[in-house]
Image 1 (cartoon, helix red, strand yellow):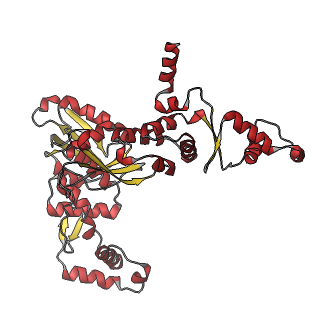
Image 2 (image 1 turned 90 degrees about the horizontal axis):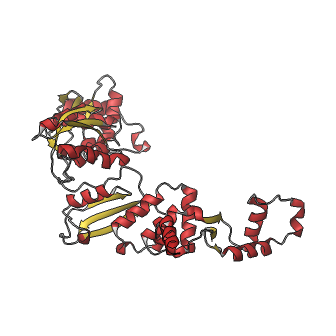
Length: 393
């Protein structure tokens, strides 16, 4: 948690307050929106949350107190601040105090440019001060550039030639600072905060080409999808235009789907189903996709939920290799290595493949062991399908 805010409804203070930690954990987002509901605040677009109090690791944010903000703006600001190291926190707070900021949009924009200023909290070590100032001006430097440089002189040049502004967070030197305007008050700039499986750009099908887009980092809750749509003026899914930016999905998923013809809800549910899988399970999913050949995100989501219905042996690509695995490594048999010359591994493996109707592919060997037909398994909830079968019988 970077900070927490006590929120209320300015027009109905009698409704009470809700204290919200920021950034909002992904799993708590919908619950947070629900908590704000009785206060009639938390709108997707309007700044209807009055900040009664801010506490936490950024005292400068007290400049937001008694101001109305949008919940998602506060959440985005906290996510930006969560990436800051200690000196960036000092730069951010020093410049926010220096500029006397009071708008959450101004604070968000400051997170993208506060690294341009120098903030001095200790004048005793001129060598360290000069090194920090030099790195700030250049946005970093190589080891070769740093070697042999007189950083004490760099510090003295700063102190003698520039006017510093005293703030509660240190003395701020602007270095020709210009405030960023990346956030327009509606669409948040692209920023991946948490690990995600897919990043998509969202825009209105009817918006001008240069209109700001919104970004989603799947999986998210359905509530977050709909609120993001509203922020960029999209009122229904038919107006939605998606562009796919990055994917951490198994390569077989990317190859199987025509993303441009998928709907956002199905893609999100697919990512939600895949996210809990570990690396070995994701590799197994890739093999299962090669085996089943799904064509829709919803089918892949169902496969991800039902991986236990499949046997998978990685890196096994011939009947002989499968026979050796079954006899020597599977644990089904007590294997005596003295009998290796008497066992026809290829024949044994071939018979099992035929009985299981399995398949070798680039990932290994896959066989389906479920009771439903594969098309039924991919279609939906196996328990629901089984119940329908039983009712029909």
